[in-house]
Image 1: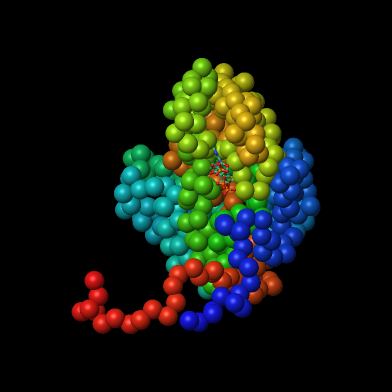
Image 2: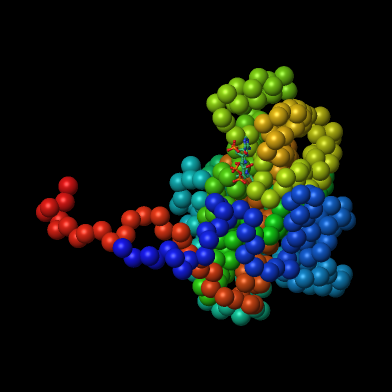
Length: 387
Ligand code: ACO
């Protein structure tokens, strides 16, 4: 009998929980204290004073931009927003009932064929490709949403920032400044979160010396799952199912008897309320005060209160994560529920690409090992004798 396990290190905790994979200077998370920093800047301070475009510059370049640097980046990113015509043709050919998340995943991969620098892994080319992808995936989502509803895609407006331009391309109407600001803040808050599953997937792909589009395609496929990027959609589905504030408690009690997870609650790293929840609540409150449509906000508030008081949730340190209030915020902005994961990607693309830059700048192939638990030294049995 061979003793192949003897030389292997002890296996990591299930799901790599608590493992530190490598150094990174992009974002810092303290799950016990509820702190998130991008490049040393506290997320709450950035949410109060900054914009998504400024944060994209910060994550890509390591420092907040000067006015001239920000202007230069704005000019560059706005000039590369339009989609190649071939992509729009492909979007028209996709089934209308295709999952928007899958459409975005496929589109990122196809965009590589139309990118003049797709196989160039130099830092300068990667930076330009990231800038193109940032604008292009927003256009993919807005165009697909219009096409599947029988409308013509709407061209971008170079005079609008990323969030306002997306609302313009989606609705074809002048974006409401409060809505555009709330969306900008949402995009800022989700732009990076250290080694989450999708970012890790991007880094694994980048570590093979593959290309940026492949790494971002891996990330998008990983974001699609309901334990990660699709939780925001599931959270809204659950709020819609609850329907009104008075139903929250019976819904919660029933869910406990069936073992159903509350979407938007719990986090692998945060053992307290997610630091992004408060700025989201602030924006959501502004929106609902302006529109008078409080229903989804009130349901979320009540559900969070009940979960906070519940011994099962308290004992496991289960608190609201970023998706919990993202869901009613996006819903209040009129964004279709099945595109919420794509909204997440529209933001996280900045973090994903920053992590690919970092991985490629000091690369070593990411290749862990498994703890094999199957049999060894089995006898060979000819096929006709098996059964
Ligand atoms: N509702 C009810 N119980 C929960 C929840 C929840 N949302 N989350 C975790 N638990 C329970 C588990 O049943 C488990 O209980 P046990 O100790 O009795 O077995 C315990 O808490 C630990 O759960 P794990 O799944 O082991 O925790 P893990 O760190 O692996 O999972 C995760 C974290 C996936 C986020 C989990 O909390 C979850 O499923 N939440 C709902 C989905 C969600 O909101 N995902 C978005 C995460 S944030 C993001 O990706 C942007």
